[in-house]
Length: 409
Image 1: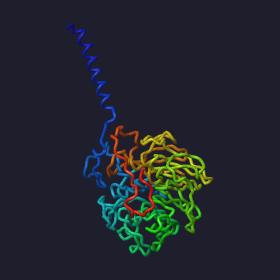
Image 2 (image 1 turned 90 degrees about the horizontal axis):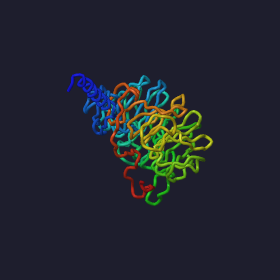
Image 3 (image 1 turned 180 degrees about the vertical axis):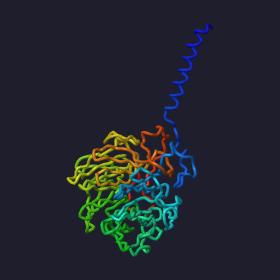
């Protein structure tokens, strides 16, 4: 072959090789969620390989709470940890060893078992629904963990502190006097823990073998306080939102007990296993409509709409119905009206502005417990995650055969 012909041919071959390599580098890498399932310690140096770019990871985050400084606290259910995302965007482990257990202590010396719900008081103290331990815990601003109420055994007992008993408490809300309201899911009641540690039943009555419809609640999984001491409850298995006034009187606030995603007047709207609620300063109630993968909004005038989410399981950052979630769980609202979402099955913490713009605050979509700066999603290499089974942390645990429960769908 003539030398003048060889040179252009070589250039073409090199160009094609360059294009192929560039395509391979840009192509999203397909990763199984189990590839990065190792739990890392607070320094991000523990077991298991690090996620891409060492970005922070979570494992089924179930609840979020916000302090006055803009820090976000996360009940990291699958890791048995309480995590913190600072206002500067750095993720750390606030409390918990990562091992399932029941130990009071400070920071990493404490232990939890499936912490499901979080609430924060005006002083910055956190209250935790430690569901796997059937306990209500408190974490002060120095990260010291103490048990407020519960006996680490399943039951239904009112009384003082550790003489009381709960059954799978899933959510907490705290008022201005540090009284804590508890969604006692397994007992189908709302409990009240006074600031002095006395546990009583605030609303509902436990079902018995002779009366299986004593309580209006059916696996209540979320609670939030509104104005005037009114409480809103995500009544999970009945697919509705209940209101409870300060006297403990219960009424249906939204939903028909039927499964669906219809918007419109509150009492004709439908939900599909709503699990969490939050209330903003204007009295709007936001609902994590878990199986529908939607965040819904109920106005004070009684109109239900879709605030964000397409309904398809996904992790798309966009606006309103063009965004997507996967099993959204706990909600919290800041002073500016931004809604924060524990996007449980995506292992991410999301933010929705009042205009409905959805962004990812922290998390990569991969299960883990890596700490570190929560870099913006756009700075990381895109990943195509292999599908994984849906996990619903609010699904009821074993209950007596006379418990009022609809068939699991």
